[in-house]
Image 1 (cartoon, one colour):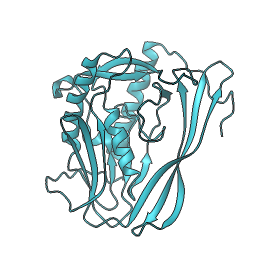
Image 2 (cartoon, rainbow, N blue to C red):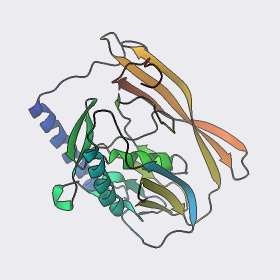
Image 3 (cartoon, helix red, strand yellow):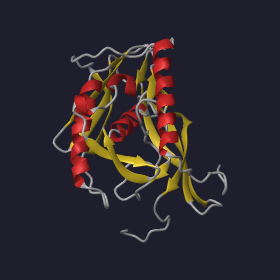
Image 4 (spheres, rainbow, N blue to C red):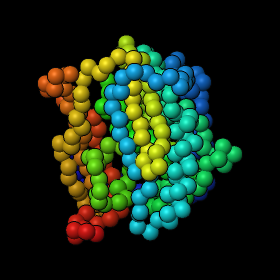
Length: 274
């Protein structure tokens, strides 16, 4: 459990330092993809597997304070392009799903537009912005299946208050091509398939399988607290657990899923309605 003074103050690095760091980590990831013995999922099928294990949907457009709605509409375009790459991906026993390996680099040539990006807690723009909504969705879906999350990065900043939140804080997965990845491993004997599609106003995802689900899952927040760091900033913390039930709804046990720490970009005690 965190105590004040354990979360360092964010550092402002020069543009060149940032560029070199990104180039280094991207090259390292490419080498990992090339040289690793990991079996990555690549097969994509338009034929849907028969059993739906879990489905979730999130709104495509949200009115965010001081954020241009044009970026939201551009995000929808970006989600549609990336979703087509992911839709139907089959994850066989012993394979690993890599978010960025499947999608590839978002570029203007592929049709991606400028969307909203969070950089050091501030809203900015970038090609392919908004794809975190997709990685958030896939991570949340995976938590409701037997798939193992082998790589996931938490959001380092808590930018917006909880207005309208429908799932616990800290149950998302940030992404940045290609080294902030989301990877899922299939340890079972079943085959899984990811379905991603957009309706008129929602992003929808589901994990399907060739076998009916044997378990049900509930994601809960067991601990939630705030600290003020010695340098003056506020940090939000929580611990996420997963409860497992059998097909009859009987409780089997729980496991810790993630511990989150995020720098708050708003006052921790906002009045109601703010």
